[in-house]
Image 1 (cartoon, rainbow over the protein chains, first blue to last red):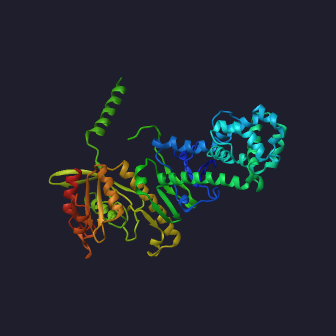
Image 2 (image 1 turned 60 degrees about the vertical axis):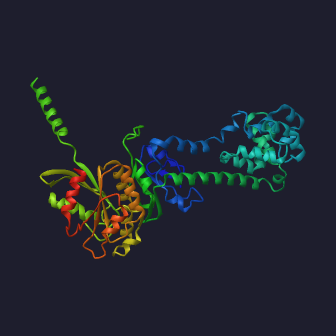
Image 3 (image 1 turned 135 degrees about the vertical axis):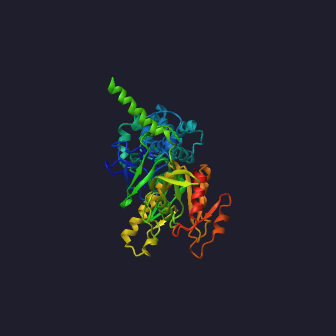
Length: 268
Length: 213
């Protein structure tokens, strides 16, 4: 379950250890669980308390989570080669393919044959056969990162995105959106039953990844599991191992962590 | 000039006092809830300082904050051993407010007690890591000592190379089984006692002086 600074409201993602060094915004050290912001808050999540020893793990833990959340929007504007999505960008901006079939960029007109015409570029850069499976692979690799919300809204609303792809196919950022739209459109399954199943599996994959990550973080950092108010399970080794400790569990899942005065690298 | 000299004198006096004597050792009294840790702490404190450490109770988790009694001077065979006694909350892996409902407690009070007890365990584990020079491990000799908590704590204490004295408490009760405690931790000496009745306290003080002096 995510945590929230009680002083300024800064929200920390589930599993974040950022809060262990105090709230980055206001310096507060009083946090509460933020219920309701994660749909599938399991019993295991509810009891998870503070993170691990910051002197050892602060960097790795934070970075993983933050990076996952932050990176997805960037590739749209960053034409670095290599990823599956970039391959799609190449398709859209490639003069030959756009010249050959300018209208194909709109998802409504897209057909399997159009896809095969546009595919060789993508296939060349992803080393995959020019089939629908290849596109799925590309999508899968592109979306092995967390899908950002605006990306989801684009793919789930092809009609809304279509006008922009028709008007501004020449600008790179638009082109990448158009490429994704074309991508969805050329998939026969998606053409049949819109792209909702497609989107859902992507999200499920991400969720499975996040769940695994959360599970891992829980295993790693849980020291006090709040089974229900007044019922606690304690991981003594975790409590013993960490430098900071909980000095006050409060109502509504709030708690106060006692932290060492300086968070320097001085391990005693 | 006179001012400076005075200042220098007083500083050196303070530092003399600071570094003249060795710091008293901090001895943590650890063990599961209701083993008689506070009863023992009070017994030791009353015997040597006249004060008590904290309230005792039949209800588990009466001690929910670590309590310290500093500068307890124990005299043995003509020499004095000075220790700080830290009475810690009982260590457990589960705290459930329902346990307290049997002791005529309202639900709200029971929930609060359970919350405080959990904080207390966190604190006790923290002290064990940071602030303790030796451990008196108190066990209720009427109960089975083979528990996860006991094994884990003794393991931690051993890994820290802390001197540890294992006490088999409540020998005044008929169900007391000292041998069972001794068998559970054969690598350590087990001393039987009744902290409540004050039985065998002489041996306990001998061992405290021997282990922590």
